[in-house]
Amino acid sequence: MRRIGVLTSGGDAPGMNAAIRAVVRKSIYHGLEVIGFRRGYHGLIYGDYTKLELGSVADIIHRGGTILRTARSPEFMQPEGRKQAVEVIKASGIDGLIIIGGDGSLHGAVELEKLGVRTAGVPGTIDNDIACTDYTIGFDTAVNNVIDAINKVRDTATSHERVYVIEVMGRSAGYIALMAGVAGGAESILVPEIDYDLQEVVERMHRGVKRGKLHSIILVAEGASSAMEVAEVIKEETKMDVRVTILGHLQRGGTPTAFDRMLASRLGAAAVDLLRSGSHGRMVGLVGKEIISTIYEQALQQEKPFPEELYRLATILAI
Ligand code: F6P
Image (cartoon, rainbow, N blue to C red):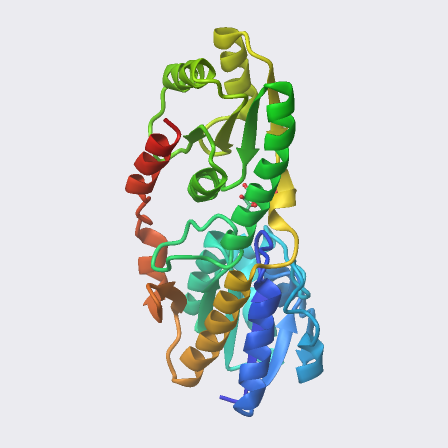
């Protein structure tokens, strides 16, 4: 192995830069050359790449986003696009490719493997919806961004004695809502993984008002419902003063937390080691305290277990 490539694909996630840095520095440490493809699979198709040196990744560990840029490439979904990407890969002289991204990006890696390209996957998405790793890069920062927002909303919610319905990202997963809801002390958390009854939410609010609560925070995962719809029902049922906050892409930006920087550094380095060892077609991940690797199929087909006991605890604590 002489030369490897790296790209970031799909929605960006804080910590991706730390992962790129780890890939580059670990590779160079072992005498390998590294090239970075820009805008994910788009860069593979159009041969948009640059050589990455030690200095190329200086001063980025603390930055959100990705210096390689990212994209969701419709062309790569087509066989012709993938064929073109393989031509570029051959011409670029790389012996392996590290793909940092979420579910869609890892599916792309599976397609490249079918065409004979050696790849290693690094899970990077704020959604934390990938199995075979306890955490994905960016999730912890996103949760902290949401908690920061809840803290701020709480101040004004208390002053005005209002109900706030806050909608958070996560695509079809409720991890961000659950973790931020527990850590932020939300009164109710609505996630797609668990059936909910808005009447129960309303009753909990009535109980809260009776015991002198000044506000209510309801956290809605985008995959469970829309904050607007939930707010309409609550307004109708309680006649309380209800406001909606949709956090949107604020959740995906900002300086990565120490946890995400650590995770990204470890996973990026592990992906290099995986390729160096002659292995490929696998995703690296963190399970417990250990860095492990799993074949893509397992990581993509297996349902990530949702921590239902944590959800129950959240309900108890918001009694
Ligand atoms: O997958 C990351 C994510 O931020 C999801 O939580 C969200 O549903 C989606 O991407 C938003 O995508 P876009 O940035 O294309 O609007």
